[in-house]
Image 1 (cartoon, rainbow over the protein chains, first blue to last red):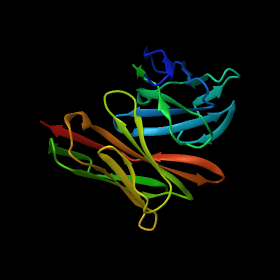
Image 2 (image 1 turned 120 degrees about the vertical axis):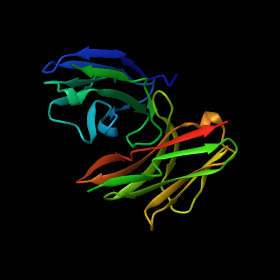
Image 3 (image 1 turned 45 degrees about the vertical axis):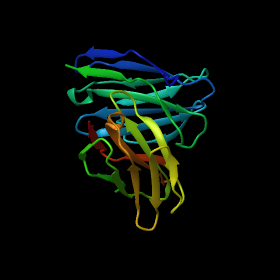
Image 4 (image 1 turned 60 degrees about the horizontal axis):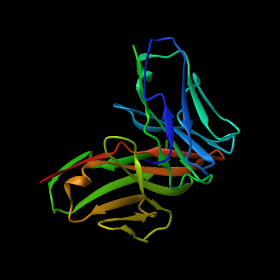
Length: 113
Length: 113
């Protein structure tokens, strides 16, 4: 158990819908990272927040957005969902701003039908 | 375009063998290279490398970085069935003032008893 929690564990929804994935980092960690892992694309870095502010951006689509709240939990919002958004979404956390030792949560498996 | 290429994509060996996994990269303003192990669930951090020629070691695993030739290797000696996993290489760079993390496609390692 890494100490990073993610909810929900599984999510099934329809195309065009909007979902919110939630992540709570390890106690004391200030950075939260979001990743998408699909079979054909592998693990893709989406976005990083550090202490409430966006720190780094990867291959995040405009339909996706994230934020980190004052209590340091983070939410990833996915809107206008498409079949290709079906994937495993991981959240990770680390103490500092650099992408050093990151602890991954168990992931949320999203299926878009 | 930033890219990270891992080889081989898949490797099957017998328990006790030694394996070498490769990661080559082209990333703007390189900062660090990270190795992760992913079994059935979330990736777990193995190593972070920033300097050329300095070997990092953890038990039977070791890794080294060559910043001149732009590659890293991950060695596993005396392999065990528990080493079976996908090994991911990721490179951190700075692009247009922002940090960016790019993952390779992974090497699937299978250790047969």
